[in-house]
Length: 299
Image 1 (cartoon, one colour):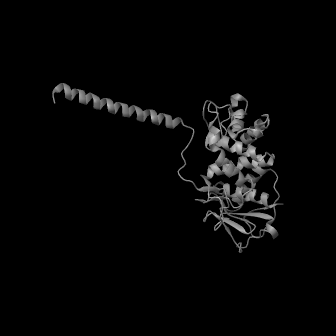
Image 2 (cartoon, one colour):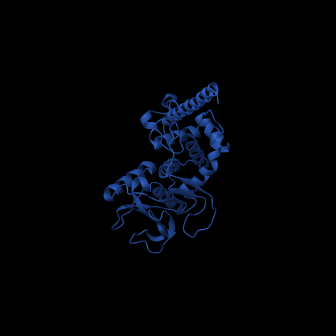
Image 3 (spheres, rainbow, N blue to C red):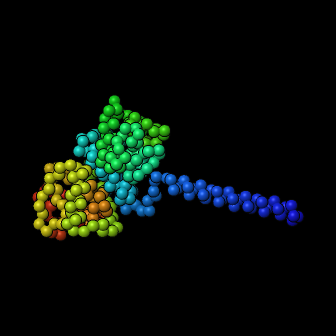
């Protein structure tokens, strides 16, 4: 190979290195500014059918991490307390899936914040308000209810009427997952929310107080019952569907609130198993006759 040829090869090689280096820098800069984080594990599963051990039914399921599921449960609870129809809950979850992957983001496009990427400059509220998942969900539902005929629209069309996104069709891809999650979180499918808690985030009375506070934030006024020797909370329920709304919310927030066991009716979820199972012995926890209480025990 003559000198000129060797020089050309060297220049080509150096050019390749420069391109690779530039690409690396650009990718890193983009990554630093991306609002979304990549989940390292999926600790939670929401099933279309009962997730109880030994149960049969629709095998389709949605996998999430604990933060995503907790946020989805909060959005659903806010909607249920406002008596938002089932369809509206699906639209809300599909919107949050697309906008933030159900993560409460601190930033985004321009001044966008939170689960729904709402912008203070567009009248959604102050930054600290929008950063509260309950406030953000409430604002979304308020806007949705103002859309004429939203109940008859496709999920993506109803969402777009609220969000005014540059990608109006994007919400539809989350419609099926959101339907499965609403069926579970609204109590229509029992034993359908399962999570494995990977660490004990709090202990004893402090955890019980934190759990009670979280319940009141999402559900407003809740009726509680006294249960002997319980470190946790016991919620009075009037009907089975309401009981499963609370039970699934408790599992969804188990990682955050230090819940280690939830008992409702003849079923029990534990943090170590991560699943619901039929039980006859509740380990000293009194769930009341006929499943009139949802009982949660904390670490």
